[in-house]
Image 1 (cartoon, rainbow, N blue to C red):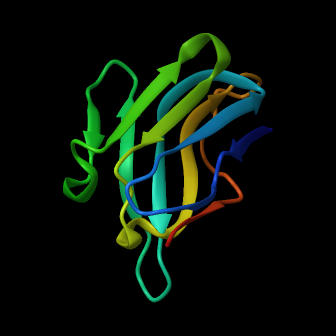
Image 2 (cartoon, rainbow, N blue to C red; image 1 turned 180 degrees about the vertical axis):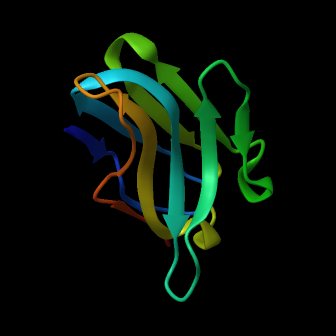
Image 3 (cartoon, rainbow, N blue to C red; image 1 turned 135 degrees about the horizontal axis):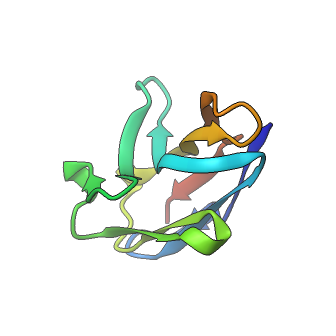
Length: 121
């Protein structure tokens, strides 16, 4: 089984920064995708940033130039550096990964538990 453990959410003032991290652990053969989604109250969950194996990093238009996704392959971890935060960035942020399990080579999609980011003065 594969688990995603998230950290780094919290309360920040507008214009501030936060860094989220997401570590995948368990029976992992390969990781095809890792990224972050967010869901604000009353809204659908949306992709913030994500990277496919060997591919470019994709960002939502709303965060381009402010958020940076990076990946540490050795640690099976992705980081989301969020700068110039705005109140509209307030949401629960969820890590997502698409993984082939080591034992079965089965393709599974895994979600983290979510971490709350609140941007408010």
